[in-house]
Image 1 (spheres, rainbow over the protein chains, first blue to last red):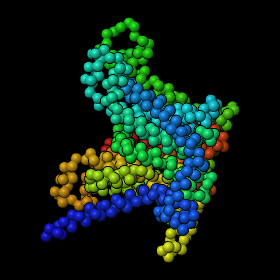
Image 2: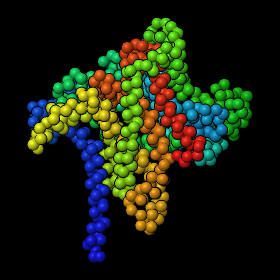
Image 3: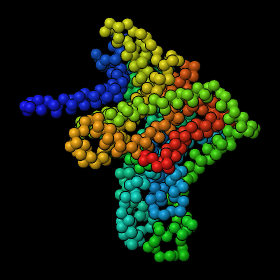
Length: 282
Length: 307
């Protein structure tokens, strides 16, 4: 067997693998690429070129979609929801993870089982009474009102994720701090939090993403258009301008750009957090 | 019991009489805020749901007790039955995203380095995008006049003009397809992470024995990740009962309920139609269904299955 054919025998399977993976990438991203194309093409071009790249750029679509999609209201709403949820949820999850990472807490196993159940339970189990309680408290159409729900729903997962980092911290660090007279909260703040930081960051990112893309609760609880999030308002926009694909595509593009940018910048922590959260709860 | 364990916290501290009251709660005081939120948002309303499911509650006024009426009505409700079969459809077709993800993940294992990472990132993007955007993109592609079908005339085939989302016979399958299109990348990433922890010498041994790609996959890869596979399968089964976003946004459960799921039906009945008691009963049933896969999993594990 000569060297050339041996080389071929190695390279052909590699090419086949790449070909298949590229096909899958086209499957995953192709539809989104079409959307980006349409966001940038004049409406007059859509009729004869519905899928291809634009022959001339129509950047005015973006400005139009921004104004008519009311992004100047919905974008701050979504950001506020994320910040409120993180501001409350991350400290609550970190404190609970700290409490549950201590050895031998009476009843901890009950709570852990509860959190496991709570992180997979259907929202519909408690949705109906929750909605009417929130109505009675005038907490519907309120961003803080919705953020409270997000905190409760997203913290169980975050506790598992953060805890999995905290249990790995060697006890000696904590003991040393205690010898120096540190109290529980000081140990948490100066020793445990810095060492569990990757976990806290990953949990925050996943929480932020979940809030940003959440639809069911946002659509049920935010009734006043002034409180719509980017996502719920996009749905309204889409039903309103259902004939103008270019305008809608531009609105879709505005909706996803912040997420994609943040995701690509921090993808390691995102993916690490998601897979680890999935695996450690076994 | 809590006090006795508090010592594990303040072990090195001298016992002082002036301990603050909050500290007598021991480590539980760190968990307290979490518990408060759980009680207010999840646990309290869940208990209310159980109670109201036995009443004819409209969400606002009094709730006359009706016993098991809601449940009796639910079992005979054709809308509910139809929605249930649609959730079951999701479960039946679950092997498809799993097989696709297994194949993709095992291919990724053989493409290391930068290229592998680029592939993984590309796969992952649909999973993190909002459902309304993903749905919109597919509405666009599936549109009878301006979507993928419209390029057929360019290659000499007349546009069939099929409305996949608007036809009762295809709406559910289409909603399922878009939903899985967004979900399977998540499986790829999780299965890939599990595969990376397989010791490389297992593969080397297989190669020394002259194993083919299929044999490696069948006898090394799959057996090494069964626990992750089983876990993800359970999670995916639960999610099959939670389906909401894609049918809601793509078809609003229609046409004529042909893509309705229990998840969308609960919101329509319990909240939009104001039938609080009936909706609560439906939500409870949905939770019971979602618990069945978990029950089977636990049962199999008890029986000694290695999953």
